[in-house]
Image (cartoon, rainbow, N blue to C red; front, side):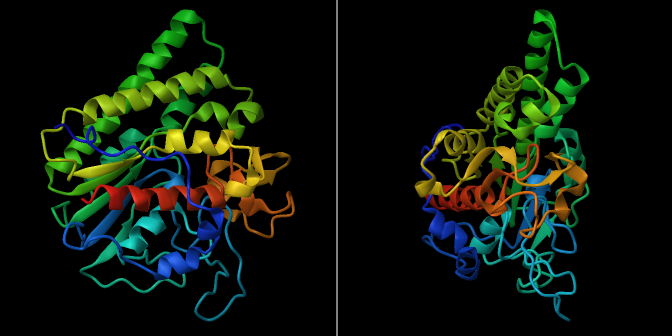
Length: 332
């Protein structure tokens, strides 16, 4: 059987938001699942763009939680209260990120390594993985989310393509997805396990309205990217799905986007970025300054989007819990 083809289908229905907002409880209750079957990494290596990034000061590229400044938290940031998706995964294995204030300090043998970068594209991820030290091995789990900036870069370079150019851009998106698939194959080749995310549909993000981009084209390119990714991953030799798992962020985020029943997910805004600067989504590189005290909107943690393509706090929580469920359903 080929890699991922035998994985169970991820439900588009996320867990109740009450569980998401009880993030500190989840982060404290690490573990779970059948320990006889579940892979226990000594190290988690996180690569990708800012949707997976925690800065050294604890700031994330979503809606940051503010707490009083203390001697143990001089930055006044409590990322453990608004965790991003990779924190859920790391916490489930008992390996919190040292960047997150309030998390337990990792030892030198078992820890979570943050190597995500703001604006990272597929090529950046591939380059970053070559620098990991010690090199990837069978005791590692790699979390991987990238591709959004690849697609935006292409569309921003040619926002009004003709029919021939559109076809070429969709084909180029497929090639970028295949390139990410090659990264997955390289990770597996080291003996490490991998949790990889599809790229979410960019045609539904605030970037479309804010920048006047073609949402249909962006959705077509997002689908093509994921098709390329899946095609490459399907070439992995048999292994019963034990090499890794996939987080279908495209399907999950679209479900959150289309589900208007706020009583289920508590998402109160699906189209506007929670973090605004000058009336537009806060620039990507500055998004880590957005906090729960942001005066641009009420209840920013309940927005689907934080920035032009970046997930809001509640979305991060929903994806994080789905990622944990995916791993438990497909023990690595």
